[in-house]
Image (cartoon, rainbow, N blue to C red; front, side):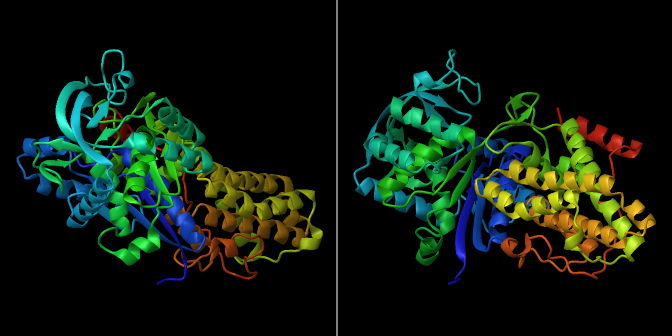
Length: 530
């Protein structure tokens, strides 16, 4: 067994009723940035995602297309795996809920809850949304009896189900949430869950009768496990529950579930109570991110405003979309996603700020220092140089504090503050004049500072823009490898060795201006931003 610290992070698993949209990419990129950061901190990371397959909607979709449900979900799973590949998502595991290992985990957790006396048979009479396959109390629906999430009419149904005793554990869960402020984040999600629990949360159905697509109840084969009870257990499945005891001991409990804010009720109330009933430890953190909005509305297939993540990445590049997600959307809040916003972000942050700094700095090093890393003379620093060096020395602390609480945009702000100072240093110090006036030590010191800022920034952006970081390393001539680099060792000012060869090469982020690029973006708008 590895002596490294372990970190288990998950995304929600995705409904296998249609191909991925940009919201799926957003959640996976968010989790991937955290996973990559933890690896840089020396953790052995286990990162899982997957597909939620035992739903009536999936069964109906398979019937529409004339294929067996299992064949249908296997094909959809390929699309989600391909999305992970395209967006550089470094998953360790992909769980399909139709897998045998998952059925074993579900059956064992159901059996434990049943034997504890926390599952009982009863009759459900109330409202049900077909789109999200969720039961709702009257007060949770809109005034016209529509699902609050999908805005579609809910059905009034009556059927015999098995129920989980949520009410038995409400006080225990409330205490856990109150004693562990980091358990549910951000704070807005935590407050919502506390309000739900304090207002009274009824027992929930954990089965559906008369279905042949799903996992049969171990105690009653006329019923199948309700899709939400089934789906939540995927996290335990990935960790090896019921199939690999040593693996489960190593990775459970999960360190972080990254999920959409619309499913916090399931992850922060039902899932913890399932685990309490089954005698298993609760996850350490559930983080509910916001939605991507298109003209102020959540993107979804039912609204017809989804964006194809494949097309948009092909136009702008994966690293650009990953950067946009992290820098322009506050993690935990909703955020706009549009081509105009991406272009503005690209031209401002990447072309003008980062790209311009790299291009100008390396051009001057080539011109004035023979394309070699110059000497750094600490004793001749003026106030402007001292200010940026001090800021660079603080980057490790500020960046780490923000990343540790999943503040992705804030962590990048720390890097861009330094980039801004570096660009200003060029204007203030005017290296061309230092060269002209034969102030060689001052010239070399300024250029060294610029190169060090670029190196530090390359490490900070590595979890967000892995390909861009590698390209910067090639320009700086540093021998970094993402698999072996330790951020606590490298994110310190002064590590760049004098005399190393640098190479400016082509610009990383040429501005989006020319007609050819405009035509590509026009086509993108017609195809994916509807």
